Length: 168
Image 1 (spheres, one colour):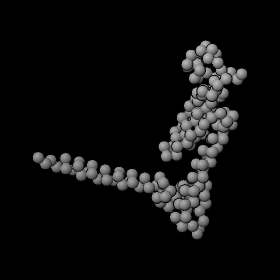
Image 2: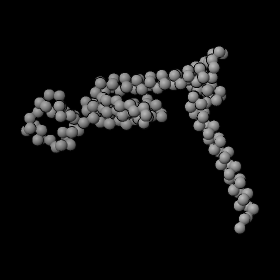
Image 3: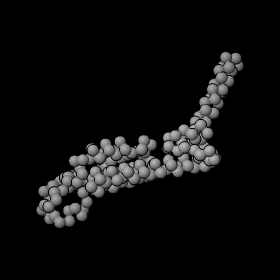
Image 4: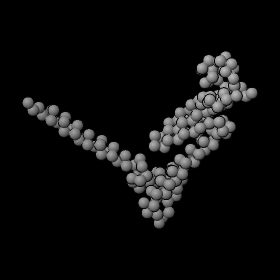
């Protein structure tokens, strides 16, 4: 049972699918400077503020764009780490996983009241392609080293774990 309309629709769908796949492959090449065309490469150069020299080959231009993008990434991450350390007076841990594109910031308890400000700052300044997690650090065993059992038994486990300790 061969209906001409079905054959026509199938051939038309195959043409559109192949057309969209071709365009998708072209777009995929334009996303990365290593595979971008001349037009895409000039767009990347404008983004990072590079003016190509007349004597530059395409490979040299690609290399300069790649290096500039990596330097910008490093500067952004270093700047955000410095900013977080300034906000928390060094009472934080920053874990950067470049492979997973995540930044985890653990903020110390002395900065608990400023937690939302630190969280907003991290989310505002972290690069768009990275995921940011801001986590509250908890009290450590060493924080209770000078306390007696009687002092500790007045509080619940949750209070011991999460509340800001008095600096006595």
